[in-house]
Image (cartoon, rainbow, N blue to C red):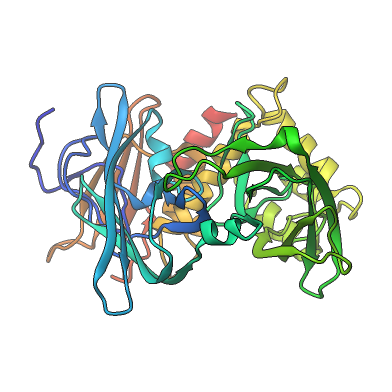
Length: 436
């Protein structure tokens, strides 16, 4: 696809408030994304240190591709010792495609990945870097870490890997990494760990989940027996190691906040009476549900004012704490394009657009309350934007075109402070009538 060069023609790629000055839906030009935001987590295993990562879609530049939109990036890992010398390094080039352009703008959707690297035991500064190959921008993390000698510990009896947090894909039911170590309201906490031994003894594993007051809110245990052990070949030429992997799917937690997961393993038994034990701890968070408090519930339904009638909004606002979730779900069920499935695409798309509006349209007002945010949420991203940011003769303005329904919305920044007001509100009224 050839690039158009008109300075007033722009695609819908509002990366950090910066527009690109060429052809419609053509994403081939670098979009500045400085200080890229991404997440990493490190878990030691006997076979090597595993690093998982998560990169939100809106932090990467997607370019047009025959099958949709493509992003390419390098994930770089560097281990530096206390003298600043590189002990180990590697990089992996990755590519990822999606079909829906709107999703490329989202922070709520992410690319997940994991890499494994063998590193000698010791103290390191871990440098992880993401390099966007389409835009030449990226981000970097620096962490101080300690890599334990699990092999030496196992030779003395038994040992445990670190704790790796997982999530369950609703469609495939497969597990995937959770580098943020965070869960949402409907998700149970999922984690895995490995236990290593030289003798294939019976070992007990006990885990507890504590809230921030140190109150135990959940716990469980698992006995690892002889038939559960798998031989590990090729670990430094020593074939005497055995491992057992344990995946735990705990029940849902009822309250948002921070939690601590404690894992204790011991020969035959665990607890105060166990003579030999190995303990691991990790923290994680549970996002607050909008139905927990009156304030969070009202904040949620207030965002829905562009899709509700006054009567529907009043019904939602007047719901009792016991009724909130039921009435909320009933409302969105009416808009669900696939009511026979658990997923509600209409609700997802609506709040995705709210998220985009809040990300792209900054102060002086909340993005979703701005005129541009309102049009985006109600009608989706435009097919074309014509924009004049600076001119002696006119105020900065934007014109949004929607080809299919033939809508044209004109916005003007009359005071030069970034607050674009919709000038032709009659066009919005016409579009609202046609949507009904």
